[in-house]
View 1: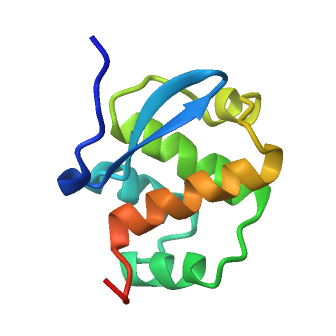
View 2 (view 1 turned 60 degrees about the vertical axis):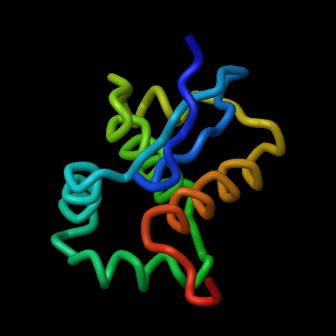
Length: 108
């Protein structure tokens, strides 16, 4: 049975390695990112990524945390080996969608 993302929970669906997967930055996933970024709080993390400048390491961490937040048992190393349609830009698009689902957008 295919699971669909629950937008009210901040979930998105993305195709990684040809498989549709659910990603969600739960509170635990956000705490994981805070630790990875030297203890930055949620507002600092949101500001950091709001600029739109995402490094490859950022994309790996965010997508990995999103997959784990949605219940997958996947390492960042495994995420780094995944492929998506559109290559690097495809990863950036997934990150942008996930961050928007998590933190919302100003223009509604």
